[in-house]
Image (cartoon, rainbow, N blue to C red; front, side):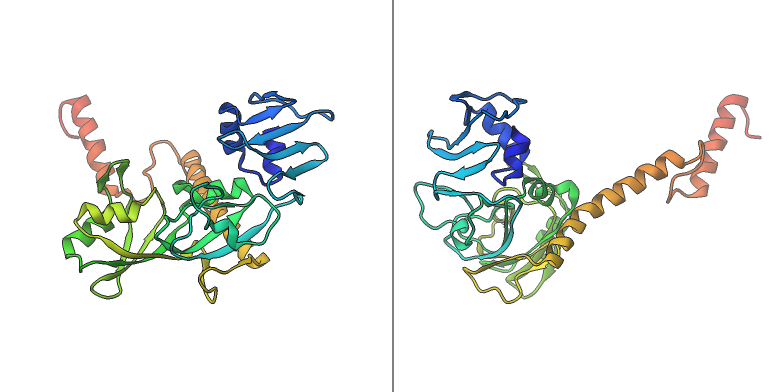
Length: 293
């Protein structure tokens, strides 16, 4: 059931499993369970946190209860230039300006990652939950680039600490970040993780306030000529570049695993110096024989 719903772009498989555990998915009027199958006579309702119906699903398709339309099969991919003051959310009863309102689509799109309300710049909206998870997980090493304007120039020690990583925040230490100085108060950061308000909290740790934060690149994608508040579908070439950005990680991982499996016992690993191995062998001979041979 969760695979069927994810295939219609309602959310990723992991997210739908969370909804099932939270009781937000009903099967024939009863709470669904993880692993339930969807039969020909079954009817599924997806609810929000307050119990309002969002989607009605059968094997024939999925109906959007909010927009009163049937969803189209397949996935959609959009690039958006989010303006300041817009929420990176799909639904919030307390705010009327959502990033999803900037896209004209009948599918249930959701943002790939987040930008806080006061931040601006490039966002990707899609109904492809699997690609969304890969683009946002740090282990796939998809880099995001940001333009940051501070209240006053940071000193050299601050920039070195940020580049090195390991700055301890409330939710753990940061990863290394590439820092380029554009002007005394303007920096360009390239990072491969994106925790909640991480850049703002990082500079607050060193006593700085972020005056403006703008994402200018997400992997291979850049804003180019997309004005604030505008959006457009990704081209096939851009989508292929995004997919290559996440599959490149698997190729690197598989190569490392292959190298470990094919390495001869006792042979040194790549980068290990011959001298280090010789010293270790000499020490072993001393232990066994009592003297160096």
